[in-house]
Image 1 (cartoon, helix red, strand yellow):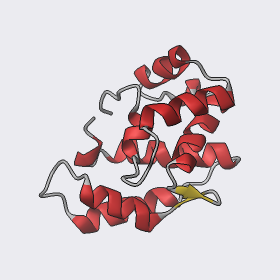
Image 2 (cartoon, one colour):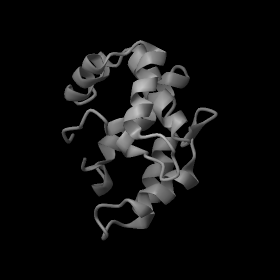
Image 3 (spheres, helix red, strand yellow):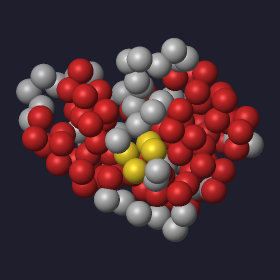
Amino acid sequence: MRTISLYFIAALLVAAQAQMTAKEYVEICNKEHGVTNTELKQFIDSKMDPAKATNPIKCHMKCVIEKLGFYKNNMLDEALAAKFFKEHNKDQQANVETIKQTIQKCNQMKGADPCDTAYQIVTCFVKSELPMFAV
């Protein structure tokens, strides 16, 4: 799995129409779920090791993607995600159909609760290693 920056979660699904910055969403979600920047960085530096995915970290991930508008009713909004990936694709040769298939596959992930489901979806994208995830 590739090295992931501190703001991976937000960078993954940054909405073009968002009025707040990704960093602001991360900070808001940190406060809402009692996660410090240090804890978040340690988790991300561990390459999102499932053993280190505490419930506050999982709920933090859910919070960020909800605030970005891509996660509603415990599901990823496939149309918004596809639009984002098409607009922000770092590899212009990436197959649009592969992107859509990855979105659909990851959206099928289910966890033990809503926070775990969001975590499963985000980690599915990380594991897919599509070119747009090279952050």
